[in-house]
Length: 125
Image (cartoon, rainbow, N blue to C red):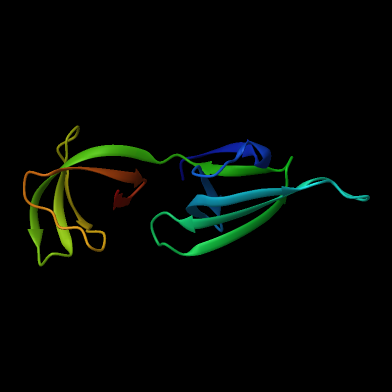
């Protein structure tokens, strides 16, 4: 899995983090002051990028944590099927694949989209 390591103190809202081996986007980040017998702690509330599940993490701020490398790519809609899936062609490699459409979004052929890709997982932004 394409990841890099950073310290927990370097995270902030809107960035990505690996929690339970799942790529997540941070919704809330807070720290607590160091106590009498320990170091400062950080609390991270995040949501899975590809599955949408909420996850929490509590770590010392000087601990190392993995951050996923997620690529933003451009694609073009080739066709749609039934309103819930779209066949998309990557504009760099010209690979074609099927992606689920987000709720409430309708697309037409020839629309250009932006999508996230991490290994074999993809999601329309």
